[in-house]
Image (cartoon, rainbow, N blue to C red; front, side, top):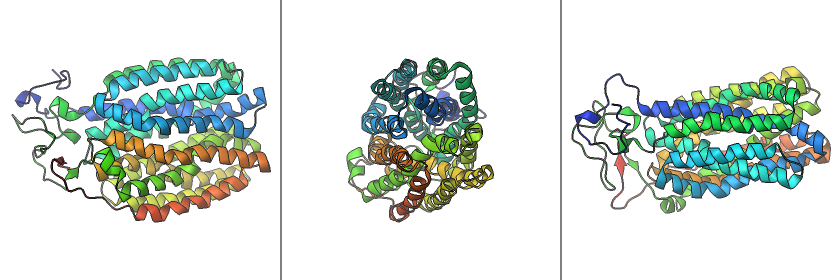
Length: 444
């Protein structure tokens, strides 16, 4: 019997990890990567393909349509701490089942949109669904299952988003073939078909199943970790620096929490604008035929950042790695703003792609490293509430600048240099310390 078949196992030899058996944490990583692949291709990146068809149908402005994405970001920021607390209390499965069901209904409602308010309402429904059952929940689950290999595990899970760009040209062709309404209807059904089986695979913490993070085996007869105890030393491994578990309230009082939040707020200001507006930007330049492939290239090139920085993040200072990504992001944005011919898309992809992908696995990894796992869901949710400002402002700002100037040039130029403002913040974010009775120490 698989050690995960029982929710409350005993802690004897029967629950030791058998040699040669794949650690269940990697199954969670694989399942979440598959979900991210679909969701990224049809929504987070692929929804830009619906931008011009919807605009042409209703005659709405770029800023008005962009506000839908900002609603999604805003709702995510409001919901994140609530969902985070629920995750820490109830685990991922129930949340994902509810959230993905709602997200599918949201896409179906999109297909019946006939007014701007209904468009915004549909965005809100989809957003509620993915806030409750999407990447945030998947990320928190993976963080709970890994410590030593946390950054690369998150990177592999988020690689699904990196590969999802390959679906964007398919989405464009489907829209051209059957129309945007029917396309959104089928996407909703796809959310249920892909997402609900993934939800049933989710399990909260390895300790509940007689396991340690990273697949390390417990000593025979060792009891589960208590609130004030330490995990047994992994067999054959030396202990590393202790992991101190902050509560959400304690994390909010640290300087590091706010500096990391400011860093990601500034970083996402530009990235949120790009993935919403890159297809409309290239369309205005007469390159709609290759715009879907450009977005696909951007996400595929982001794999270099997700996996490369994911690997380096487990052995190098994550703050310095984030500085590198911010510099590359600035360069990539400058190239995007000045694209005048198709071949300039190539240097844009080679600089912006890794810069966009790199910070993604490092964000949950640095939160877990600085604040621990016990309240990770709540702490990540609270940080998302702070960083959401950039995601809300970015798309609206870029769309507004295009409405004013007839192009995205000035908006992208401003966002490029804004990225550099995050560098001093992340360099000042040093790991906090916590000195109190009952702190949980685990071995990395």
